[in-house]
Length: 455
Ligand SMILES: O=P(O)(O)OC[C@H]1O[C@H](O[C@H]2O[C@H](CO)[C@@H](O)[C@H](O)[C@H]2O)[C@H](O)[C@@H](O)[C@@H]1O
Ligand SMILES: O=c1ccn([C@@H]2O[C@H](COP(=O)(O)OP(=O)(O)O)[C@@H](O)[C@H]2O)c(=O)[nH]1
Image (cartoon, rainbow, N blue to C red):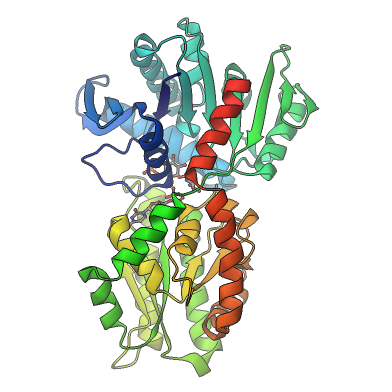
């Protein structure tokens, strides 16, 4: 059997906590098969990049590389998170491009290729993840690597006119043609990629999912919606009811209903809009005043990047403003927490909630939406209010779908969730849960790996 080698910038090392969906999902996938996980150590060396560390946990071998302060600033904070991240989330207005950070991006990809190449065997299946590592396959091929190389994009693929705004976009996206298979979160992302290949890559779409590049190279692409370990989340949530942190939250509600949001503190998640929509709900639905408390968990993410710092300040102001306007002596409508919680508590929090608020402006998938559903009590499930701009909206048909820019619409959806009769809540939840039971993390991994073997 081939060994699975996963490569990603973010690695969920056994001794670290991280709150991104990629790390959570890949950890679950590797636990089933074992294999090698290669990527950044999460450590910054003041002097140089390239110090390699190894550790083993169960059947998973971790090999990671430290980055220098300069590479971390220019590759991770810079080109990955100030150029590609906003571009791929349709935020051309926030794109900050410089040749210097692009050079650093290529330099770190070359470092990854140099370190990884000697570890690879011919029959390995190498699965490379996300926008940090687009050029890696080309660089590995240049180093004589012949094994199968797959790529998965966790974030959205925007329309080709937006991609074309990136200087040197042809050179960057041409790198994708060295992969045997390119995976996207949704069919819509795949369609937009195919448009780009036709319009700007001078390639051809032979049939859906089979492309010919300008140089005549054939490659495959497909939609593989990522998912969660549904059974494990459901079990964790049921067990979490007895946990002290969950009991404390339940007691603190004093009989009121709970609405919950769980997101990295990122502008793609639509948090200012969500906070304002909650303020709108308090104003528009005064008949429900005092019935619902909103808890937003938002661990700080990419905190060295200016746009993320500005967002944090904006959310602090908004929370103060909304609470100041609507709080009563014995009730604060909004709780805002910048801490990272383990799944053992988080799943219990989801289960306590009547309303799950997942309203990103754009999101590749959004695993929180799926976790919220899987964590519910089948006899008394909560209601998911979900942005139609999250990849998850394509699958979770029992959610109340909203446009996150329509604050009144989101406010009305919150009110509808509060009033929704038990029978309708159960119906909506059952159809979503049925989907998540069959399309779980194992189905995602198997679906992709089978397609990579066949490519
Ligand atoms: O590694 P970080 O910079 O701390 O960021 C965390 C991750 O954020 C993004 O996650 C995406 O992947 C999820 C799983 O497929 C998906 O549900 C979500 O919609 C995406 O935003 C990013 O793409 C990852 O590379 C980061 O590790
Ligand atoms: O305090 C937290 C906040 C988030 N998460 C996890 O981080 C992931 C977030 O993934 P999602 O796809 O929703 O968004 P991303 O952060 O990857 O953009 C989910 O598994 C969450 O349960 C967590 O473990 N603790």
